[in-house]
Length: 259
Image 1: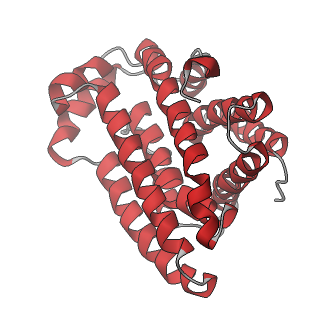
Image 2: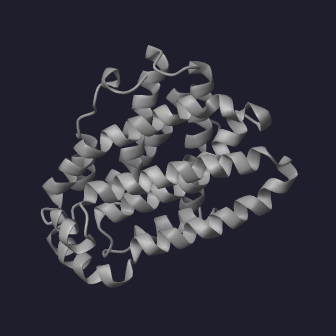
């Protein structure tokens, strides 16, 4: 599948979302969230929010392309990275919370895909030039979390119990995960940028193994699992309704973010 523009990416994500809605497939949860983020990035490219709009558009295409390819490979039973297989396999299971599905997707896409996309977008010694816009994407992601989480509560009424079960609010859990993930993604991109591309496959495979282990922890968090089951029992089982709740979450204006 060839993606050459952000509009191509949005069209591909729309296809994933519509297919998931039709089939009641939980893979649609991450697709809806990612579609919203990508739409906001397109807005930022068009409005001059980023330092280099052309480069940011290129990064968006490279980044999203990895997710679209993974989703396509999984649908066609082809080879794909371990971390995405773990995330997608979990979508066939009733047990994970909507929130866990989102975190499993965020884990794979940021901890593995983002570093690779960044290193390809600004290879070698040019990578540091990307850092400012890279951080602006971080601001966009973080700004969207509050509204998304508020809407998750409309279909998962006991989600607030994470504050008691995990010792911190679900908001903090997600922000912490994304903050750590994006810091790690930049370190991973820096590691790749210092290598010849011939050496990338082994480094990527190693990263993939580590990220897959994180995915297993997100989906089966040991002693927390019993408490999460209580939350899950109260959560909506209607995939389409849950997707709609994510889709209609309001999006903060770019003007309110650091520029």
